[in-house]
Length: 481
Image (tube, rainbow, N blue to C red; front, side):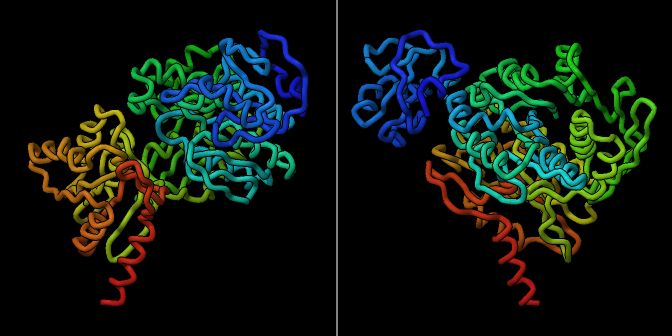
């Protein structure tokens, strides 16, 4: 592709000689003959320091934000933004041919995204999915490591979708992705706001910064769907009141759509979705008040796409569950559940939804992530202490932080509250200990990993699949009966 075609939509502040470019990268290890190297400034590495070497390794252009004195340099305002747009251009601007639904918030993004995809499929509409659990092109699945991928990988996925005849794509959009301009040059038909609670402050530093990063989605969305039961949701609704706005609530009649006659069970929630002059009966197969919000957000995201309101609401009754989201791994003689909850609010949501239906002892296994916002650890402990009869403290992803020190930072909370607990650093051992303690009619929930099949210990990623651990335990348990 010609360099001039790759640079379409980017403000250029220097002259350059047009030439054929074979690829685009911002990674030093991916430099190849004839490529364009984008000098992104990161937290630990400034790509500008590698500009000369990139040319020596075969790059035919270097994209910079400061004069490096190189003949091959092209000066732009922001290399991150330029990189995202160049990746888009490299893939024939495929994303512009898709109807995009973007979902943002602290909790509920994954479930809402999967439910939107299920609703579309029930109406005969194939779609793509980009998110935390996996990426999908129709029914084909691809591994993911980031909620919102690197622009290079993301635009390749968009191109695959268009080439496969897909017209819709549902995306989880993270605050880091917006801050790092991974989504530059992308416009959404609908943006959905689920909620906002404390998370990622190690990155954003303040809640205001975190919230503002989330709001970039709505700056680039034609329609906005907002949960106004959330305090930040109210701000979103007020800030973007002049856009095509749909609000929803499980509490407030002032919203455009309100959930009425809510009835909770251990594995579902039933309610009436009441709009202006419309009532639709919903039996959503996931428990908890937060599931009301996820269901309504997904259905109304589809309504914002001009899909019939009743058809979207009816489709909620037949959606599939989501791996690692209040997922039941064992039903009897005791119950074992796996959930991704890893914030105070996330734990509050899932534990409060399950507690009323637990008949025996309620055991909660959880850990706090290392090298992340330490202030949220007590909020997590408070949520667990509020609902658990017994706590199993273990590791989540300690990364390079001492896992025992992480446990020590919260175990005193349970001692002060006289809540029985055990602590085991090794998560695999902790799970097996907890499983071995289970008695008839008791419930154990494994919190924090959800769909993940790995753990990060001392900076090294190791395999750990809780689904597999539980399955092996139950195989031995059943054989020993």
